[in-house]
Amino acid sequence: MKKIKYLLAILILSLVGCGDSFLDRAPISNMNDLSFYKTEKDFTTAMWSGYNRLYSLYGPESLPSFYGELMSDNAYSDNTAGTVQDYEAFENHTMNENNTLVLGYWNNYYSSIFILNNIIYKSAGSDFASKNALISEARFLRALYYFDLVRAWGDVPLVTQPLTISDAYSAGRTPEADVYKQIVADLDFAAANLPLKAAKRFAGAASQEAANALLGKVYLTIGDKAKATEALQKVYGKYSLVPYADLWNKTKKNGAESIFEIQYKGGKSNPYSLYWAMFTPLDNRIVTAWGGGMNQVTTDLWNAYEPTDPRRDLSIQNGYTTAGGVKINVKFAIKWKDATAELDGLREASDNNFIILRYADVLLMLTEATGDPKYMNEVRTRAGLPLYGATGYPAQYNTVALAVEHENQVEFALEFHRWFDLKRTGRAIDVIKQSSKNITLTAGQLVLPIPLEVITQNPNVMKQNEAYK
Image 1 (spheres, helix red, strand yellow):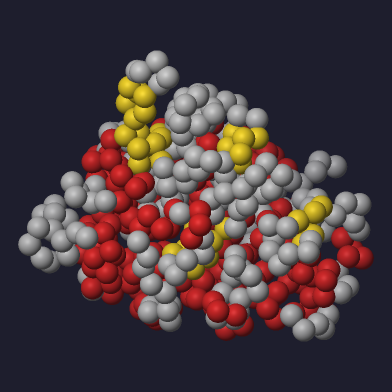
Image 2 (image 1 turned 135 degrees about the vertical axis):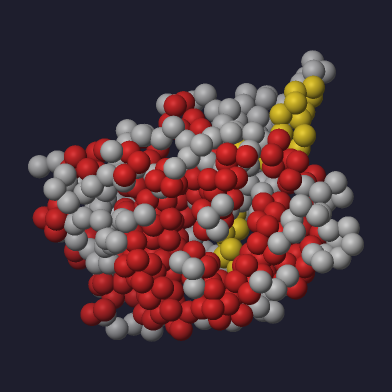
């Protein structure tokens, strides 16, 4: 019987060591899943694994990176490693059901959800002090992972408990609306049971505010602006904007603006980050030891910045000079710059965290939800730019909707937001056509194909997205 890769995976757990963060980790091997979940320590150990999956799910070659940025007008790929056409399919929207990256993403998300389902399902019959907190964290992560899945594929199998192989064979795609209902239910539970940010278990743990911020984004995505506003107002005023440069300062991690942040630890013997190494120009050999050439900056993104916007030069470097004195005109991300990182081969073992949710996002979402530019103007005040409605504000963004779209692009450049934002607001097809990529898309191409291997394993219930039939 063929292995069901898309719903079940081997449970690979990581054990917290002497510290209080999933940065301190050691693998558990030869573990029998059926007999593992007995004590509070067992469930806590499993939860570290749930957080650890963020490293791969949000890494530089992840679904949020390539779907969120590479598919948009912000980025292009200069990568030549692996199956080049699979990377180019995201950049140029030449996607097909045989894309190996898409299959890998599908498998990775479902194996991650399998871990969380074990925690949620098996803790029901247990009684320990931190039970509610761990279940809440697991449901927050499950909501986040399903939110990525449903935005990228539309209808996806909704699995909320561990499945046997026979059950997995009968699982088909769940309507998108029902997946969103489960996401909302998970976030409602998390928001009601997670601690406030000051009391969360460790720096990278989920909090009540993180659940409400994500819930606001979910409600915006499904078109319920009133409920989005309600959720986001629960976060408003509880954080503050920091100087933009501080967001990328390795010595100022988990600052006053950070709501949910993936924790990395520099050095080749640690769980280090690769954003700096992989987002620098391909084989540059001077900016970094090598350079992956991924998510390179388009002229569209560069030109989107207003002339006096300081965020441009804090986010993007405009070219570099080779050892021989030749200027290379390529624009690339510097938000995750780590010039002193230890090398692991030809890759920098960098110390940069990655922020999934931050307060500026809450402010811009509030303007999107309410139509009130005052929240967006807080972000522009931080940048030292003319406020919406004031003299000097760019005339081309003459509606609040266009103004928010512009602000999102430059505020969150290369942070895996752009394509998700454009799809949510119904602007993706127009923007990509008007960009330098000049790509004509249909609505069906806004979602990814179901991997062929997944359909082959279960052809009676697993149907392909319309654009890829």
